[in-house]
Length: 135
Image 1 (cartoon, rainbow, N blue to C red):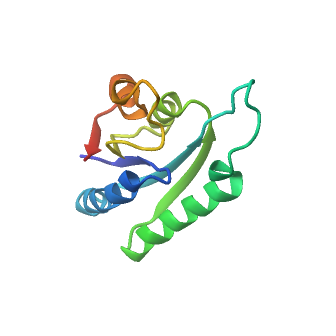
Image 2 (cartoon, rainbow, N blue to C red):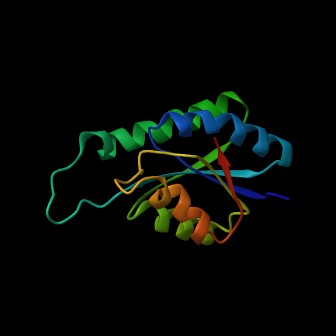
């Protein structure tokens, strides 16, 4: 049913909590698991790099996530992309032929406008496949 599952991750608590659901779904359906981290491109007016999203931090985040799933006996692939998170997540889902995106209800991408303009809400509206949101 879910041959390919996309799990976009960041350093949020919600992403860590969603990992259990991802493991359960992937094990139940024997799915291919793709871990994705999206680094938002810095705005032209703020070119300084946030140390929380440096290439080293992102690589370590993906490595730790891959190790976590490996302990559960789950093989995973990792992708690191740069761009607007919601659009990039949906583009990658389309590109890899994802049957399901699983993500936390809120991540580091919550904007000043609030939850109605969150990355999660945008993914739900733009996704080429079903989206499972873990509260």
